[in-house]
Amino acid sequence: MTANLLDFDLEGLAAFCEQLGEKRFRAVQLFRWIHQRGASDFTRMTDLARSLRDKLPAVCTITDLPVLSRQDSADGTIKWLFDVGGGNAVETVFIPEEDRGTLCISSQAGCAVGCRFCSTGHQGFSRNLTTGEILAQLWHAEFFLRKHLKRDERVITNVVMMGMGEPLQNYNALVPALRTMLDDHGYGLSRRRVTVSTSGVVPMIDRLAQDCPVALAVSLHAPNDALRDDLVPLNRKYPIAELLDACLRYLPAAPRDFITFEYCMLDGVNDQPEHAQELLALIRHHGARGVPCKINLIPFNPFPDSGLVCSPRAAVLRFGQILNEGGVVTTVRKTRGDDIDAACGQLAGDVLDRTNAAQRLAQRRQTTERPIRFVHKERQA
View (cartoon, rainbow, N blue to C red):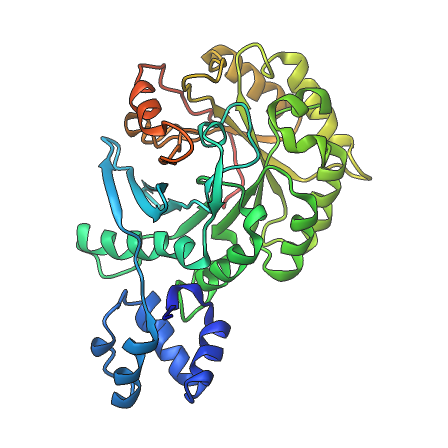
């Protein structure tokens, strides 16, 4: 059985090369060819010894994910549907902005957490992705975009693990992928520009702080346990107080001096002024000095069977104003790619053996009010 070199971070690739009787510097050369130049053909790697180039095809591959579809939004957002085998597919989204290019990457086919407002969670869980499948999303997107946009320099400047799945429930595959993203011989991304989003897997937050601390985003969505139990079932195992304690423990190792809290705005569920006041009190009074944070308010993107509705524009603005006036930096996330179902909470992929996700994707195309951006003074990323 041949190895997929996308499964290795640099240390893993060095160990693989040692098994072949090669020195560490050969692993560095290979790593650069793969992740800095997008090469998959060993014969192109001209600074490798010919003996090694001849040896590699028999023992390893550089395996891309088959593309089932690509959709281009009117706003420049691009969504890929990648085949990961066994009737499963995952979605990856590129979001271009003036000063950055962000890639939203999936970590699982489906998701076991089952948040009420998330389309991925409604399709059920199929399996974890491998490190190679996580990295292949970045590898494919980066080198496609360089050709597509006719650019020689790096296009993707930020990565967010906010696609399908709960990243911290696929920890062993996630960490080598993160290390490759950060490695100067790989993609060379700053720790501040790589974000892991979690619904609150407390023990893994602590492990991430030790193993590979990057920016952390926590899917909070409620100011109390009773409401969060209903919206984010994982809260029944790791309630809010334990989650906020983990956030405080994470901060000393984090590349930023704050945690990002994601809060999906649901009409009549969690968007009332009393919810904002309760959230403000929770953040400001937890622990000795409160939890340093930034809050992203996310307009809900409707999908069938959720039974939920997006909060009205006025309610979102009112909620954000209360938080801002209380001293908590707050933004309303701008919806991108909603014409191709690429917006937050809409990624559904296609788990053919478990759900009729493709039919549900087709049914979901409906007209919704386009959210606005809440303008305020914000810390620089």
